[in-house]
Image (cartoon, rainbow, N blue to C red; front, side, top):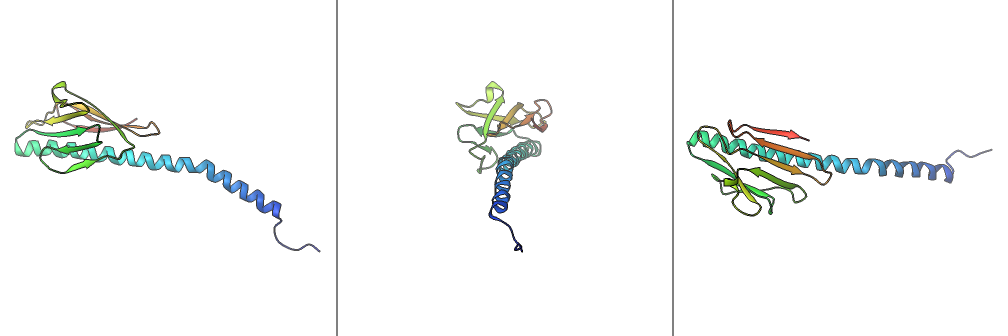
Amino acid sequence: MREKGFSLIELTVVLVIMIAGAALVGPHISAGRETSQLKAAARDLASALRYARGQSLISQKEVYVSIDLDENEYRLSSRDKVYKVAEDIDISLVTAQSEQTGEGQGNIRFFPDGSSTGGRITLMGNNEVEWLVDINWLTGHVQIIDE
């Protein structure tokens, strides 16, 4: 009469299947976390740009967002706080030549009529997923585009 239970071979096969499944799923979980982090950074940056445009309209003064590509940070001219972006996110900036304030630094300026100097900020993660933040020069409208 045979005893009820599992043999060592059956347990080993199940364990190998579980390890193979975890190996296949693991990289996808970390890629999803990185994409979420990238999306959050793009939303935060777009929110700061929209806030700067609103402050410019309300105060009837120029307001700019200064972006430091080397330090992965940005700040608003109307605030003292520095906003950090995660170190594993690469930032690139396309803006008017007059707004390039130094090596790896530039501004997006908003004017009292709602317009801006315009530009594009690209946020790229390690998995080569890009999120773009476009600023329309004529209307100052800020738009997030995922690539």
